[in-house]
Image (cartoon, rainbow, N blue to C red):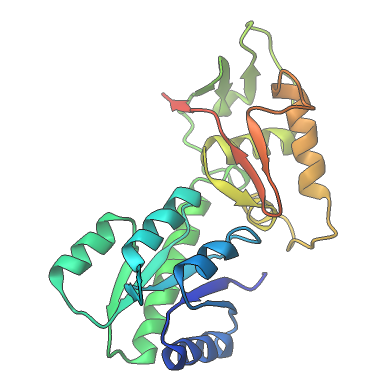
Length: 243
C-alpha cells in the first residue's frame, strides 16, 4: 500500500513543522507550503491525498485557496485555524472543507481527524470503484452520445454500434465516468484499478489510456474526451449523465 501524501499549508513555520513531524512519524508522505501560491503550485506536480489548510495565510484567504483546490480536484481538505468561529466553520464547510480543527489543538485529535477523513475518502472511492464490483447495477452512463451499461458490460457508440473492450479498458472507462472533470493522477488511477503502487517509470496507465482513447475518441491523436494534464495525469472532460 503506497504512503498517503498530505499537503500542509500554513504560514506559521513552527506549527507547520509540528504537523509535518507528526504526520511523518505516522508514516505519511508530507509536502509543505507557506502560502497560497506555493500550495497551488504543488498541484502542478502531483495530487495529494489530503490537505490541511490554515484559514488565515497572511495576505491570502484559506477559503479562497480551498475554492481553488476544489476547482482542480476533489481532494479532502481539513481546515486548521486559530478562530473557533461558527461562521468561519460554516463557510469553510460550504466551500468544500471535509473537517475543521480550531487552534489550540491536541496533535492526537488532529491525527484522529486526519485518519477519519482519509477513511471516509477511501470508502467513497471504494464504493465507486468498478474494480471491486461496487458499481450500481442499474446505472446507465451516457457521454458524447456513448451509452455504457455496466451490468451488461456493454458500450455502445453514438451510431448505435457495440464497442468491444477488454476488462481493463472497461474498468478504466468506469473510473473516469464516475469521476468526470476531475484531475486524476497516474497513482490515483492505479489505486482505483486495484493495481500495485505507481512508479514514475511505469507506463501501464499511459498505455491503458492510449488504448481506451482509440476506442472512444474521434481522433486519438488529438483527444477531446480524455485530456492529458501535463506532469500529473488525466481528466475526463465530457459531461456524464447517469440514469
